[in-house]
Image (tube, rainbow, N blue to C red; front, top):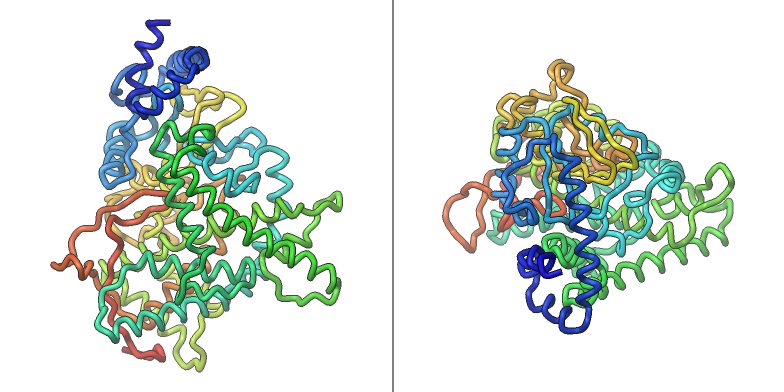
Length: 529
């Protein structure tokens, strides 16, 4: 027992010394030793099974790479170094708790993402902390439960529904642009993109999901504030190893804040779903044809005639809001940033949009227009490659998974598919850190592996809302270029000229200190500047 405690001491003290001492003092020593013994045996088993994988230098046999996975610019540079060194994959241990295979080459990514959904399980490292918020939603469920929910939710992302959403994308973008014009008129020529665009995507999703007019772009909304707080708290929890256990986390100050924000979000969605179910019951077949996300999933039934329960619908609505607002806001913000950095590509996109809109009386991008923006779409895809909103997805499997090179991922290990690493792998992309939209020219795309570009993941468990996201991206980027010329900006409170941006990988890819652009308004009518 003494040797066991001596082995565990560095790990436990690294995590939270006062808390650990309180545990020991309250009679939990025996329980702790039993738990630790099982943990060490499991760690030894995974270490042996994964010995064929290349392994970067560790802090120790016990701590592994704990503390080396950073949510910072240096963390992304560390991924670049791993990709340069190992090219395909390597193993990674976060103490004795998590055993990962990190994959960043299409040949290794493909068999993992294309595996049957029946053998694919969402792990707790990235997804477990979302469960109190999102429940057993499509994002977090597995097996037959996942298959049933995927079938039931698919109608909510049908082309006919997406067509109706385009008008919402336009109206929310108009609101954001009007706010930008007012701010520029008062002398605020440099604006921070993430703040504005996140409120715009939340505004858009609230309309698409709940038909709720929040006015959150102009005034404070308790529901929106709670979503933002929950996202921040999840990131904070991920990097505190002891907070990964619920019985610890809910006793902390952060856990109590999480519960308070969670109650706001859950109360909002519960009230919407209950009211909407009652309304649909009253209207019956006379219900209007134009329906939002909640309406559609309330009335969808599976092959046995069963629909989702109120609790399941609340979980899916919460997931739609969580997964849809931050990722799309990141994608839009980085696309605008990359076009500001490359004015010749920006002008080519603007000319394409102007040609499309020439002679029109209206101010909106229409559904049919989305397929007529080829170069703008190429720039959006290249931005998604260079600055993917989600840096990685993780999976577990119910059986051993073979990989090229005579490697095997043992059952129960976490497979971390590095989207960022794959998108920046020099064995896959020439000059991977340069912005070059012509990579996505139709002729060039033919020469690239199908799993070299995976911003929405891939395979049976890919992002169900990717067409929704791409439609919103095209609308917002096109309208923004029509109304504003973009230049690199800087935080006016800090002064100085625009400098290099330090990336900040959190739940989505952001920028330290914000992403600032200087906006030059063009003709409000969108005519030739």
